Length: 72
Figure 1 (tube, rainbow, N blue to C red):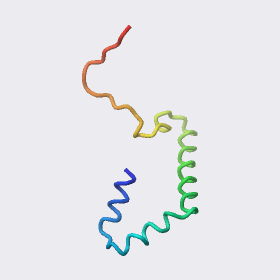
Figure 2 (figure 1 turned 180 degrees about the horizontal axis):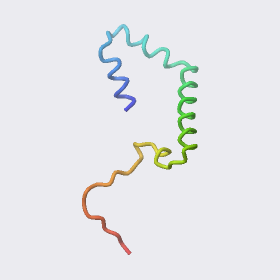
Figure 3 (figure 1 turned 30 degrees about the vertical axis):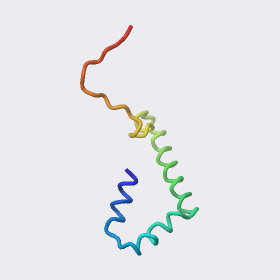
């Protein structure tokens, strides 16, 4: 999803504008802020103590339609 967001943001730019868009994102300070934002949102989810909020949505299993077979 992040790649889609970036693509949508640069889609309307001229080619000369793209490097100036990405240059700030390649700094150490930007990376530190991104990690801090991610860790603070994880901490908030942990305080709520809801397990589904701790698991990234990309890793969640989606139940498909069809019969469920149990062995045993």
